[in-house]
Amino acid sequence: MTVVRPKISKKKNNVQMRITVAERLVKRVTPMTDDDNENVRSALAMIATELAPILGKEPTITHLLPPVLLLLRDEKSEVRLNIISSLGALNKVVGVDLLSQSLRHPIQDLAKDGKWRIRLAIIQNIPLLAKQLGKDFFNEELKSLCMNWLGDDISTIRQAGATNLKELTEIFGSEWAIVYLIPSLSDLRKNQSYLRRLTAVQALCLMGEVMQPDFARIEVLPIILEMAYDVVPNIRFNVSKGLQKVAPVCGKVAYSAQIRPILRMLLDDTDRDVRFYTRKCMEVLDEYEGHVAL
Image 1: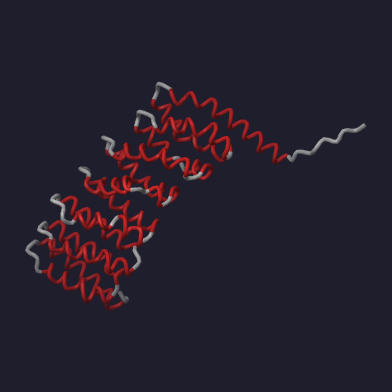
Image 2 (image 1 turned 90 degrees about the horizontal axis):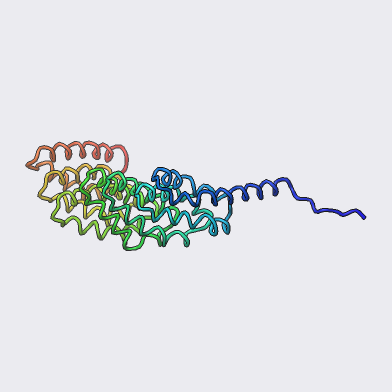
C-alpha cells in the first residue's frame, strides 16, 4: 500500500527554518545580556529586536522580550538608549501594550542622564516613539520631561527640546498640543529664568508653524505677542524672528490687526538687535502681504 505524504510547500519550509534559526540565535544571545563588557551589551541592544519579525508574535514574547527587558534595565545608559532606539521592529510584532509600561522608567532615566549627548539622543527618539506608541503613552510624567528639556543647562538640549514639541504637534495634532503643551509654555513666559522664557518663545513659534491656522492665531499668537514686552532684548528680537514664520500661518487679517502693531512698536526699541530683526521681519512680511495673501 502506497502512503501519500502531505506536501509541504517550499515557502512554508523556508519560513519554519528561519524561525528555528532565529529561536536558536535568541537562546545564544540571551546570556550576552549579562556580559561583563558593556560594548558587547550595547552592540546586542542595537540588533536584538531585528529578530522579532522573523520569530513572529508568540515566540517573540516568549523568547526575545525577556532579554530585551533586561537590556532596558541595564546599568549603562548607552545600552538602554540603543535598545530604545531600535524598538520599531519589536513594536510592530508585539504591539504597544507590552512595551509602553516597560519603556517609561528607562526613558525617564535617560532624560536626566548626566551626559548631554545621551539626553540629546533620547529627545531625538521621542517623535519616533510617539508615532509607534501613540498619544496614550505620553502621560503626565513624559509630558513634564518634554517641558523640562526647555530649561536644560545645555543650549543644544534646549533647542532640541523646542524642536521636539514641534514634531509632537505635527504627530498628535493641534488640539492635543493646545491641551497638553500650550498651558505649560504659557506659564514659562513668567519664569524668572530668561533662558526658559527664550526657549518658550522659540518652541511656540516652531509649533505655530505646523498648527492649523485657527489654533495658531487664537491660542499661540497672543502668547508670542505678549512676550514682545519682555525686559530681555534677546527675547524681544526672537519674537520678531519667530513672527516671520508664524504670521503666514495666522493670515493677513491677524498680521494687519495684531502682528504689525507689535512689530512697529519693536522698530522703536532701545536695543539695536531688536530693531534689526524687527526691520528684517517686516520687510519679509510686507512683501508677503503685497504679493502672497497671508
